[in-house]
Length: 76
Image (cartoon, rainbow, N blue to C red; front, side, top):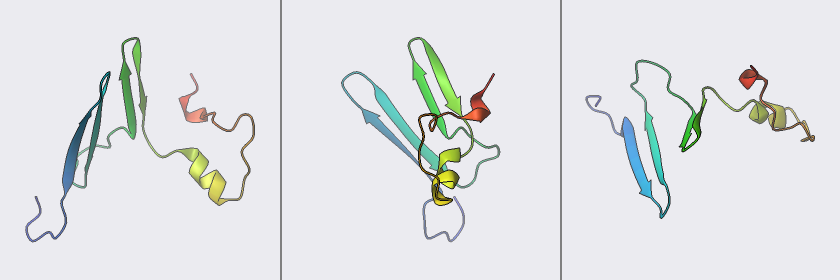
């Protein structure tokens, strides 16, 4: 999309499996932030914006605990 660019600005990959489809997409030229993850199922959807907070915790040397996977940004 960019004149003279040496790398692709975006991509879309559709992966078909027996019982589901995976869509992977990314782009450098987008007007609004897009979800980091979006999972759609027959009983609802899960949409997550932003980075996983566990990455910074691991880099800081924290060790996973039983509550490790909890994401306070998703609290009601």
